[in-house]
Length: 343
Image 1 (cartoon, rainbow, N blue to C red):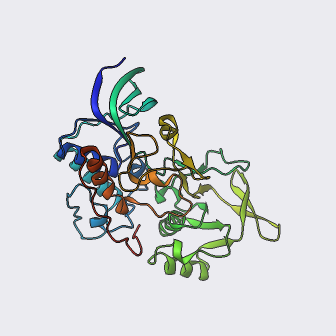
Image 2: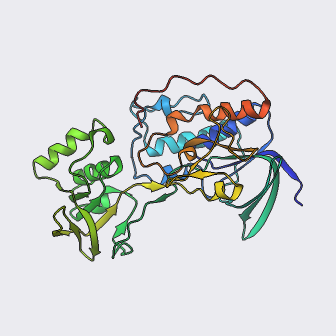
Image 3: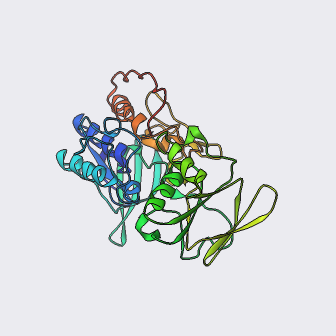
C-alpha cells in the first residue's frame, strides 16, 4: 500500500485547477497536483493571437489581476503567460506530463496511479478534486474522408490557408471566428452549417454583423441547411435539405463542431454521470460528488455541454466551496447569476 502522500490530490491544471491549488495552499491544506499535459493545455491549442470572449477581470484567477498592454481582451499568448506567472508567484508544484491512469478506493482513502517516466507511480490521498475540464477532445463526424491529411478539428493558424480553398463545417463561435480570421488572411472560405442560419444567441455580437456582411456580399460562401457527406482530396460533398449533393472545393477542411469532455476519471472514481453529456452528480454548495471525498471544479461539472453555459468566468467560486467543505467552514454565499456570461 502506498504511504499517505497528501491530504488532497487535484487533477487538472487549467485555470480553475490552478485556482483550486492556490486556495488549498492559502488554507494550509497539503495537496498534490497532476496534469496529463502542460498547464492550460486546452488553451494552448487555440490559434495564435486568439482573444478570449470574456473580459480580463472575469478570467483572472486567485485574486491576481490580469492586465493587457492595450486594455483589450486577453490573447491566448497573454493568458498562458499569466497562468505561468500565477504558478510561479504562488510556488505551485504541479506534476505536469504525469497523467492519472487509475483511481481506486472510497471515502478517506484513494489510491491514484499515474504514469511517469515510462513507469507507474502510486499515491495515497484522503480527498480528490477533479478539475479535468469540458473540452478535452473534438467531436467527431462519421463520414468518409475525415482522416485525410488536409482535415483537422483544430483551427491552428489562418496563415496556413492563404490563397487556398478552406471549408469550415460548423456554425458557432469557433467556426465563425475561424472563418473571419481565415478570410482576412487571404483564404477563400466556405462554411457548411446544418441550420438555416447562424443563431444570433450563439454568436458573439461583434462577430455576427461582420460574418453576415461578408456572406451577403458574396465574399464568403455559406451553405446553410447542409450536412457533410464526404471529404475527398481537394474537396468535400455536402447534402442540402432537399437531398441534393453539392461539391465544394477545399484544399483544407476544418471540422469545428464542438468539443467533448473526458469523464474517464469521474467514472474511475465512481461518480454518477447522467444523460448523453455525462453530467456528473454533485452538491453545488460543496462541489462534492455522490462519492464522499471526491469533488469537482471547473467546467467538468457540465460534462459535455451542448450549449455552453459553464465557463472559467462562472467557476471561480468552486475553489472557495471546496476549501470550505474540507475545513468545515461555512460555504460562501452564492452570487446572483450573471444575466449573460461574456464567454
